Every structure is written in C-alpha cells, then in structure tokens.
Length: 111
Length: 113
Figure 1 (spheres, rainbow over the protein chains, first blue to last red):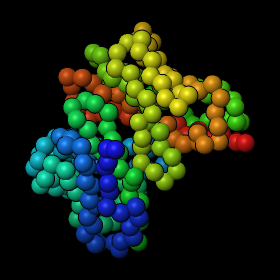
Figure 2 (figure 1 turned 135 degrees about the horizontal axis):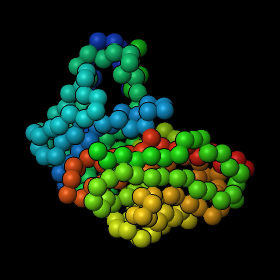
Figure 3 (figure 1 turned 120 degrees about the vertical axis):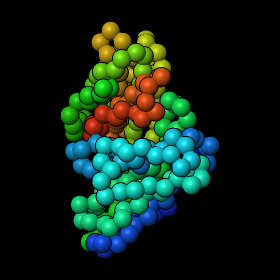
C-alpha cells in the first residue's frame, strides 16, 4: 500500500518558535508538495520539489522554507511561527503527471 | 493559466438522494482530470480519474465523465449515504506542462439520515 506519512497529526507551538513539519513517502516519487488548507480558501501551494535539493515557490511561500535532502523526505520549516500560520498542512507526492497521494495532514496551532 | 471551478457548497442531501457536484475547467491541451475526497480530519484520497475525452471514471458508486466539448467533469452518485459526507475536490494535471496539479476549492457534502 502506497504511503505518504506526516510526522504529526496535531501540533501546538508558541509564537516565534521554529517549527519543522516532516513528510516521508515510500513510492520513489520525484515530486513532493506542501499545501496549506484553510476554510473557504481550498488548497494553497506553499512549496514544491521535483527532485532532491530542488524546490520551487508556490502561491504562498512567505514565512516558510523547505528542505529536500533525500528523495523520500520533504520538510516544511516555519522560521518564526506566527498565529496566522495556524492551519491544516498537507503533504503530497506523485510521479510525473500521475495522481498525487496525500498524507493525513498536520493541524498546527500557533499560540 | 489552468483553472478548475467547482460549485459552491455546502451541498445538503438526505440519504439515498441523487448527487451531482459540478466541475468545469480551463486548460490548454488535454489534461487528466481527478476527483479527490477528504473525510473530516484526514488528507485527500483519490476517488476517481479520467485521462482522455469521453473516459468515465468510477469508484464506490461515484462516476464522472470527461467532457471536452463542455470542459466539464461533474461528479455523480445515484444514492448517497451518510458516510459520503466529506469535502470533494476536482483537479487537473496538464500533461507536458507544469508538474503542479490545479485544484478546485472543494465542495462540502452533508448527508442527513
């Protein structure tokens, strides 16, 4: 069974903390994505990676960075968490233009 | 650029009612089309897909037909259940284009017993 695994289902962090969200896929996919999901706004792409050490900004990259040191792992970093980054974060991966597989999501609350 | 438009929700139905969720798209070329479902508190799961015009995708009683002439991929189910309550996303992938899929905003479905 194919799998995309996000390291946490729920996280609570303080304003100003550096936050790491981890995502691992076991399907040897080249492409990996980080989305943010907020009510009424759908999915918004934060960053995208098409290969190890390669990344592209999505629609809302401000306040975020990413790291892809190994093919299977794609990390999202909040350099200094703020309350407006409270959201559901979704990781996804795919090969070429085939369907994307999603992780279960991380609900992050910044207090 | 590419775009996907879904009907606004929520869609509220009684159990065993017929479901249609509209999806239209704008894209050059011949995109692949997808429907994803997101159950409460979960990530998205692929529900069905169609990769060329007139293809019909189907799964779990849901169906959608790729209509190039109307640039549509409407999701239908003949008899919904309470367990179908979820958010449904229409999406497209442009072959030969960007690796980034284009998603609609999602349509919430609420099914009452």
